[in-house]
Length: 277
Image (tube, rainbow, N blue to C red):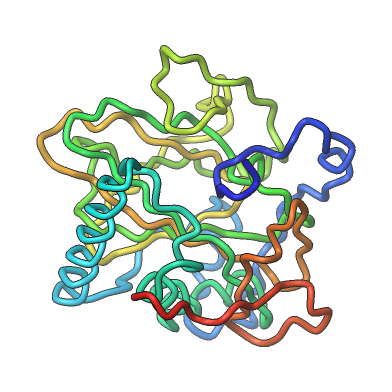
């Protein structure tokens, strides 16, 4: 399971989990070069950067067509619309999105001068697929320490409440690592964890985005999404980043690409761009 971005930390690694440093690290507005002081303040207070334009309308059409081809290949090989994971190690086109300076500039304002990109996973809810993403924290799935990582959520299709866009619990990242339970089959959860009574940790914020827009959220922020019961697809590409000083267990450092600054300790493998487009 360790090869999947959404895999939980193995149960036999419980001691390692207990020793992980899971506390929020605020961004320094004085060092920001791209995000505004207000955006930094909002991230520190609420746990997310609400929206920014990552790709133009024409560019996102090209990316959508590219994803359509990847999805067609994946389904033909027996996968499904959630199977395209750690895609930057397989496809040069996804590597290019993960390393896009428009995105990395904003991430670096939150994480610091040395940044690695280690994850890329398409979350594609097909029309009427009925699957939800229960309230969860990304940090519960990632064997990383300390907790100094973010997810960029890039909308490939327009995403709104009707087709199951993402929602945040604003400010919940200040509550630390929260207890979760295993999801039951009746929940039709894309993942396998559910945090109960999530609304008690803050206010729900709807992260509706137009195709080509993106948001950023902290790895401790509670988030999730309702099922897509509409006639429209809702596809997004999640891009994962961490400060280069973060350490990864379970071999996950093999996924990490240095996208800003350097990795002085050489912890992250920094693989080259794949030749397969």
